[in-house]
Length: 411
Image 1 (tube, helix red, strand yellow):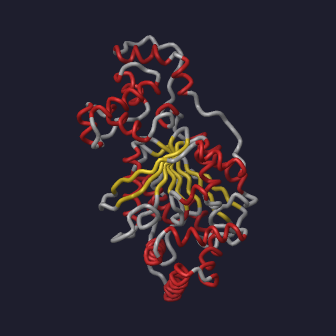
Image 2 (image 1 turned 180 degrees about the horizontal axis):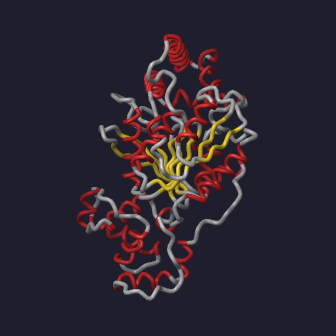
Image 3 (image 1 turned 180 degrees about the vertical axis):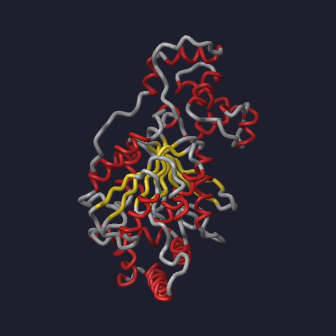
């Protein structure tokens, strides 16, 4: 997405709609919409609740390639950032979770954040699910298409999240402006030719996790948590245990983990072409530090940031948190797409959807049929869109939308 010039028009021949749009761009209302969000410090924990209430998320649903229903959420303000969270999360519960709330506050401060529940987890479909890396890439693609964003930053967490992010970035170089990988790996613990000892250890871990999932027995339940956040407080440990049980069923959890451990992401790393930041904790006992270093060496010109921590999931209380968010913020600001707040934050998810269809050449009747709403409702939404963008005619809105990437792909 390219920034919009607020200066005088260049001496080139323009179509009538473009001339009209240039005239309106110089108005203070549109200039205010298009100004990038101010550089503000990270919000403290005590203010996080107020921030989340002022910037509520919108939860929607889409279908992946195999028909699996995927729940996704949009929140925040600024240029788009697609986030593949660690699979232990829940779109609704995250808002009050001490594990994820600090992340949400930080990532939505200057970005329109698009995230989703993994297949088999949270609000996404949980029954009759296929678990494998290609399905995870298809889920990511479905969410991006449903959110109608054209160019964005992509942030993948842990082995499978980073793997899906690398695969998508390698196959869609024109859409990913930059890539962040936290705790990535080249391949899972039993991918390829695993030894008998590795297979035995994997089976033992899965059995312990499965036994501890439903009953809350500390001896079992905390085994998984202790691996992921060994330096967590009692409160964070309790919250993560509870989140783990509410994320999905024991059977799905075990199948997810097994698919992660069987995946090989090596081929995707060397095919990534966008600016990439790789972050890995030195003491990570889930995915060894050496794996992150290896990914950084495979991705062309990747930046590598070691974190002095034992936590696989970085917590706000971690001593490295401030340094991490500062580096991530700087990287996203430097390599992310230009801000277009009027399109990404002032408009609701439904308005963005309608604007995308308008920019794609659809009339009111076609939009109404696609979205299963009345033509009157479409007209009302378009009136709201024109008002928020500070323009008077739909042709002006279409030109502005196309300049920011809307309607350039068939939907």
